[in-house]
Length: 185
Image 1: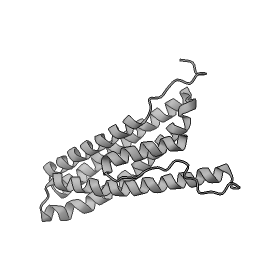
Image 2 (image 1 turned 30 degrees about the vertical axis):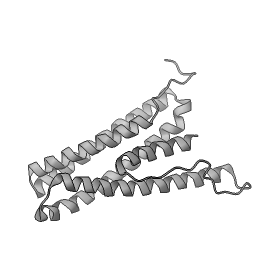
Image 3 (image 1 turned 90 degrees about the horizontal axis):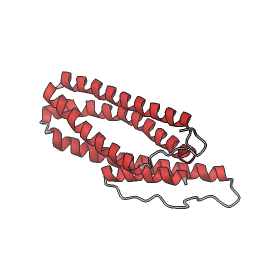
Image 4 (image 1 turned 30 degrees about the horizontal axis):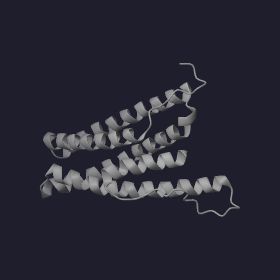
């Protein structure tokens, strides 16, 4: 159930942003009855990871198209902008990996949430948000230096809008954390 919850979250949030139609098959285990449960879980996690990578690829393509349309760059600006943007996306993917790990941890602990786990997850979320803002600040400076402040501000504005759309979709797919029955309130 936890793995299916992760699948639903990732596919739901990426479909809303990327437009690729895919389904996470129920009971997708391809193992034989003699294989262990951990092998089946591992196979299922690998399948989900493959879906995530496929959807991420489609999302990056769609996102680049939106960025290209909104940025309104001429040929000279494009020659400067896109190599920097490509590096930004590569760095942003690392943060996306942290988000995926956080969602996975949340799903793994959702049914048995403790104060300690909730605190760890909340602090990781805050750390990720700070890292993401630091990355945008770094690339704003790079775009400003390579192009001009208006183009750099436009990049930041477009990136923030797209980021908020994806964040909203992820948040809407995740159930709100509940108190564990044994935890003190």
